[in-house]
Amino acid sequence: MQQPGLVSECLLREPFVLATPADHPLAQHPAPTLAMLHGEPFILYAHGAWQPFNELHTGLFRANGIQPDFVQSLGSTLTILSLVNAGLGLALVPRGASAIRFQQVRFRELPLPAGICAELHLAWRDDNDNPALEAARNAVRQAASDIARDLLPIQGQHQGTGC
Image 1 (cartoon, rainbow, N blue to C red):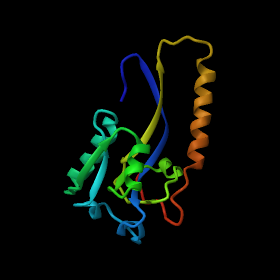
Image 2 (image 1 turned 180 degrees about the vertical axis):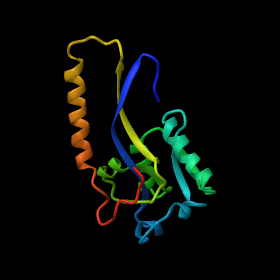
Image 3 (image 1 turned 180 degrees about the horizontal axis):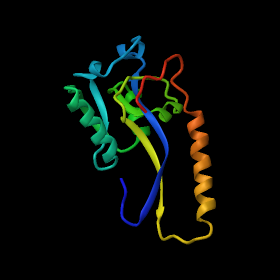
Image 4 (image 1 turned 60 degrees about the horizontal axis):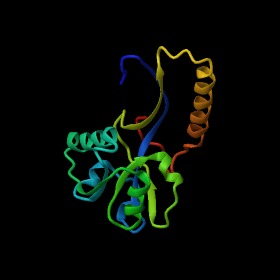
């Protein structure tokens, strides 16, 4: 989304993956689907803290006639994964979150429609004439490139997303 006076570029786009408690049936299912989330306890990103993720996920569920049992909405991926670890529900989190290790959390690829992705954007004022701006942008671009290179598919699974 462009704002007047700002320039932005998308640096990183990553799919959402399903975080499940280790003992949940979907943790071992050979090919979990979005429809399998219907009626399941689900932990959502809070609208006030992560409005784009909240609206993306609730819109995805609504468009597909899926009604998870929303048990909690939180503003932090780490807190969401903590509740998944405690067995309180399932969650969709950016794939990069699979680098966070919890004893009782399993991550599963989930085929999602095109465009259901987490994005990282670099933004700056279009009238910024700071001579260090280009060097700063290049450093951030390089860091995002390094992160993107490390975002491999979940072990043992194919990447079935539209990102």
